[in-house]
Image (tube, rainbow over all chains, first blue to last red; front, side):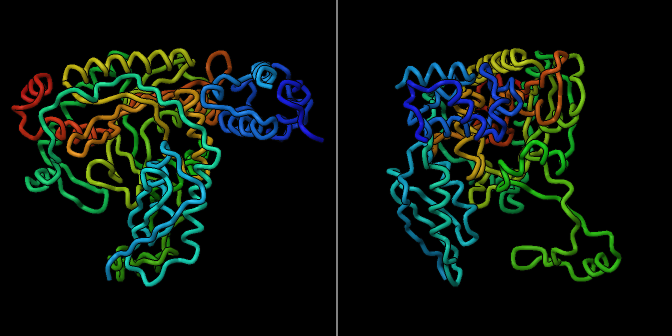
Length: 83
Length: 395
């Protein structure tokens, strides 16, 4: 199954990406999850997630965005605005 | 037999911001390497090889893998300069090392291991008096930490994963009469090492400490943080093996570091780090040091480098005070402002009153490096030094 274009990404797409990277069941991925608030989403996991976002959805994430994309709502908004 | 050189064209062009980082890591690729230089355009690596009989077959593959691991998909860092006083006029432009050696002020005991004489010791004491005053302004409580550090605790904070290349291990002879007697009779130094078989030594339980603040965090582990926040200060010896990069007082295997450490909620740590930076800035202005403060990252090893360095950079976790070395038109990190977020609080289970992991940060000064950079800029004659240092020196 191909990945959706960034502007078509929905929570369920991020849910499955987070589940793969963090090695958890998708049901454990909360729609409002945040870096630091969810113990599994620590600094190393964050960088794995950023790299996975780049390769899955074909977007480029620079240093500034690495520090902004720290919640699932922020990531969704970023992807949807970078189609 | 003379050393020889080997030129390698990296399969991935090395971006400018990674040239220094990759160059320093090449020292750890193979024992035959005695020097490495990456061209300014990032298209060529020149290795200097010891006069060994042969080059290991996989040497080039290992070099290529280091470049690939560190440079592939590298995130271009934000370079943030918080202070730029590099252009300050300073009176000296000579390398002080030859004179320091000839006066007996510095003596090389071994690669990366130096003894310092009375002038450098006294100069460091002058800086130390200032740092203690700075620490007092935060009501930072004094601590004394051991030189050895627990292997078990370092493992808990992933140190072995992030910085394996710079570790220095401590061991002892196994508790076995035959082994101890055999060592006592036969041990001697030969071929650049002690001749004792490795089986004579115990398992590694301790290392020589690579940083000061870790000891404080370890002492706070697995309990609620007393009072919900604290400031502390300590000076200690730190050990980071840097292979062929070890270079005079600029890069020592055994060096001393003064730290002022903050543990508590994020805003407590960040506000104190910033307050400390402003106070240090005033001090450096008073003494007229030429320096800048800019974003930096820790020297993570190859596999960890790309992600960890990008994370540190993105979240502005580390800034270095880089003093100018006029004699070679470069800079040297003499201190740093660090914020670890809740990394230590989480890994060591240090909890705040609200049950969340504590945040940590520190202000750190490399004492030998600071003294060395000062002498590079102001020379060895104390009569030529800036008034605040001269007065403290005489006082």
